[in-house]
Image 1 (cartoon, rainbow, N blue to C red):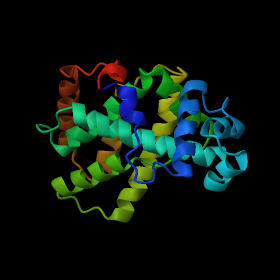
Image 2 (tube, helix red, strand yellow):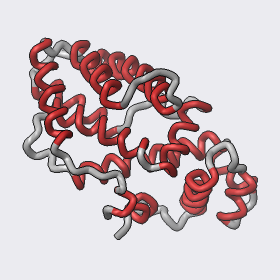
Image 3 (cartoon, helix red, strand yellow):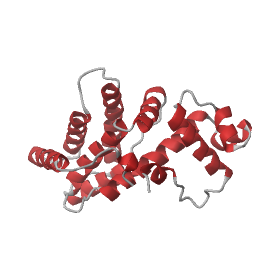
Image 4 (cartoon, rainbow, N blue to C red):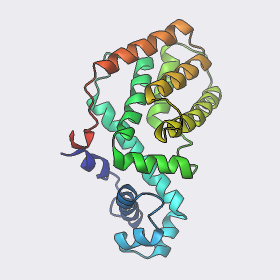
Length: 226
C-alpha cells in the first residue's frame, strides 16, 4: 500500500455522501494544483455537482480547504505514530519527536508542502493545533503532575500555535536561516517552561528527543513507505 492511498482513503461512515465526495475532490485538486489555483467550479466539476451544492455544504473555498487540511493533518499524525516506535519514549520526548517528524514530512513532500504552507500564508487555517498534539500536551501535564488548568493550557497552546505558524513560514520561504529542528526546540521548550517544567527536565527532553531522531531512519520518501 502506498502512502498516498493511506492519506486519501476515507474511513468516515458518510464517505458516500455528497459532502464527502466534494471534500475528496477538493483534496485531489488542492494537492495537485494548489489552493489558490483551484476554484469552486473546478471542485464542482470533479465532484460532478453544481458549484451551488459545493457552497451549500462548505459555505466557502476556505472552509472546504480547512476541512481537507484538518483531515490530512490528522492522518499524517496517525501515520507517523504508526511507523515510529514511541514505546520507549516518555511523553515529553514524544511531543518533541512528533512535532519535528510532522514538519519534516511536510517540508520534504512537495505536494503537501505547497498546500499546507499556502494555507498558512494566505488564510487563518492552521491557527488551531491538531487533536494529536493537544492530547499529548495533556499527557505531559499529567505525567509530570503539573498543576495546569485546561484554560491555562489553552492559553499556552494559543501562544505556541501563533509562534509556530510564523516561524514555519519563515523557514519555508527562507526569510531567515532557521530549520524545523530549531523551531521545535524553541516552541517545545517555551511551552514546557510555561506549563511549569523545570529547566533541567526541559533540557533532558530536548536532548533525548534529538538523540532519538538522530537514529531514526524516517525517510520522507514516505510517499512510498506504506
